[in-house]
Image (cartoon, rainbow, N blue to C red; front, side, top):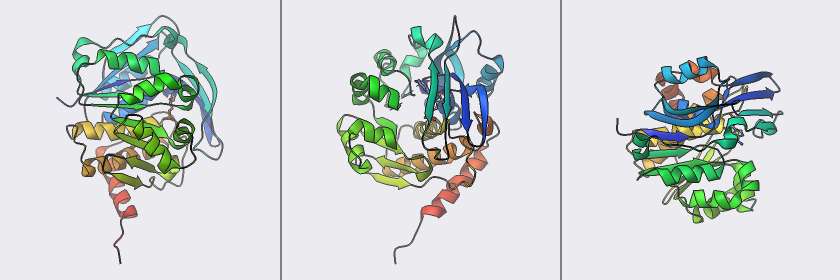
Length: 305
Ligand code: AMP
């Protein structure tokens, strides 16, 4: 298949507490969620690192989904761990602990065949690692990246170098305000765009997403769910669904395709948050995705009087 996406990011064991329950050391990580989500739309090549303690069943889950994991290195030591909690405002994650473990010495090594990938998604990891991936890939058609508040705070210069070299930047609303140093999201989107990326997607959790394109400005609501269980991974799932769809369309960046990509990303994220970890995604079908896309279309459509 010609539309493969190379996805590099974290593969993690997450301990998460929300007002509705908690899990300890469940499968997580930015690259895990993004890869699983993108694999509904196109073929995925995952590059990351795990420790010797990483449960075999998780590898089986990725393989069974058809995700290529030849680039998933197993290093001596423990897998990356993240612990976080949420209060009733599920839009804001509080990081309780980040244990880098095997990430401390990780140097992404992109397999020769993967270097030719047309689509590259740099999921949330240290921006210096994202730069090292960009230096290894040959001539991708489209590159996208995600990030988080930690890197905006401690590595803003490296992050600026990354976003200068990407076509799509995915970022949370709080992070967009923090990075662009403004309270207006519309202004933040435009400021971030002026730093390099042709398209900026601001994710607003339960309030939907905004797309700033070259000739496009599009706003989509979130899927109206009554029960959100755990928002962890929603952003990565959104980005994986969005970029997976764009790759499936051969990298078409027309207004029509990008609007659809936002809606597919929105639908994908709405499933992730219904259960902990990847539990809901594991049983998800394309029909269920299409059904939510249809509902989103009806929800946001109106006829001008
Ligand atoms: P989000 O989609 O923003 O909810 O991302 C949640 C995922 O990010 C979790 O599964 C974590 O394992 C992962 N994560 C948290 N902190 C980091 C970090 N510093 N580097 C890479 N991945 C992280």
